[in-house]
Figure: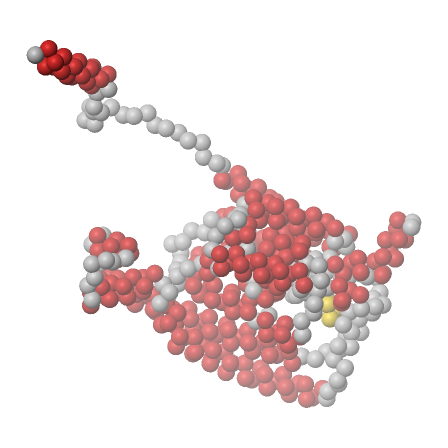
Length: 427
């Protein structure tokens, strides 16, 4: 009896204690109209950083233009490369990126509903404006991708002219397909397959990081393989650099044809004199060029037709077509386990007919823009053939301004510049 009373008293004390705890911590009342205080978190001022990005972009490009045009010095460009890799590369993680901005601008032209960020447009247009004025000063050391390759470059094994010509077509093809996939709202392939972003962000897709590492290893032995043979923005800048107002000069004195600048150039942008030693009849060269120009429309038309025929296959990478194909497969062969995309489509009350209409619009866009893209591919191939067929003699070493990266290596190798420095310093 005594044990039963002890147990009863224990249970009573537990009940009393529980009641007290309930009074101390009542259940939350969700219907009393009580409003919880709003929590404010300090967000980083991204607009300020974007302003700093644009300010530094303009400042560094101006500094490079001053160094190569007025001072003809390479050392300032090295310091700009270090700053660019540190800030635009590792600190800002390679974004905003002038190379990727091509896609935003293309989409803004094709789709009026897309509003391009001001900072992205400035990163696209400012290097072009500087290229039109001073040449490819952005490529010299302001672009973190080019700067990183420049800093690791030690030796320069020269590639043959034919290999360089073939590889030089790739950036134009990359540019054309990047624009095609951007205007059709398929994907931003430049950002998706960027080989250096994983390095700057210290993580990412292993395959892309490996590809970026291989490019850097190649950069040790040959000048800027990504800039010369892959970069679509570099291809765009080369057009404006070719007609730049103030052009880079190896020396302000008379060239003595010593060949030192030609050997020093890591991107083979300096053409030697009398390069075409085999002379040909003038009329023969004129006839060859006329033939190429007559064939050029045929090349453009054929390329446009071919890519138009391939447009259905290219459109399959669009998200609406992927979803439509998954829906049709599910309707034909229902499965218990479905993908997240299918689950979202069905839960959201997806209309198959509306999705089919979207798919038709996407296919029409690919046929239209694919035809234009194919025409541009034909134009690039035709003009490349014409450029290779042009033969001209040079009396001195000349810079091909569309290929020149404004790295400044040729300045220190030119004995005329060395003579001027000794004269002005009194040594």
